[in-house]
Image (spheres, rainbow, N blue to C red):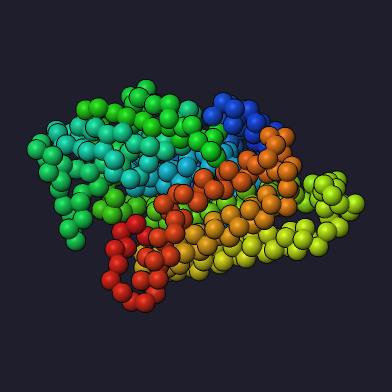
Length: 388
């Protein structure tokens, strides 16, 4: 096992053809094909955000997004699994050093899990007793650690509160083998992500394997660690969308050169609707990408000044991520429609891109309510910015 590639984007581009070649196998098995897992692990791409102190890449946010996009262009499920593993790697800079070394010190470590507080944690000597069941455990088939969001409660189940009246929320880490995986991932899209439910019951979790959401600050130095975890997650989701849209445009462009639609004497490429549609899909993808990277660049410049990102910066990142994801969805829809009857067959990847992108947009980080939250920030209205 080697430390992370010094060129994560180049490494991701080299892995994308493998992910594409094994996409059917990944989807049938409902888990990422082992050779793809091995390639991503060997290149260190799951560890892009882990501090260098623990053998990670401590990459820039722009590199993170570009690497995820490249892999997702090969296969959406592979890009999604990379996104989950990489973004949860940021916890290495938040955990106590003992926990960070235990969870992220192994160069073969792959993390995953769900941040939302679907479990409870009762304080006990040395840590917490955790009980909960979480959905969307992406990468559950290959992760070495899964985390689960928990609400800290007393022995009677009453939630603790922190400043501002927010409940005391933490992330608790569980090693593989300590949780039960439920085979629940029977879905329309991103089928290969193994995003199953997972569960623990009265599991002891040492304090050093937990992180307080909104409480614990990064101990690692570097511009990367000024970015909020929720924001990085949203950017990662958008990056998967960019890759899927790129793949769909490439697919329908190739199809247009060889397909003559039923009832027509001209190839699809010669029809005005195809020409306009492909151009519009390209514009949607590139405009969404441009806004996303511009927002990242602006936030990175602010973070380099050494101050925490402002609410305005964080809102802009979430808006750009949501816009990119939804622009990419429109681009894929255009490609799927242009493919006509060809799009519905399993021999065409367009049907998978269509299912994958519409599954992606259901993620809370790029959901429609984001526009309302960001709009309230822009209008100077009261708003809960905890998840920004």
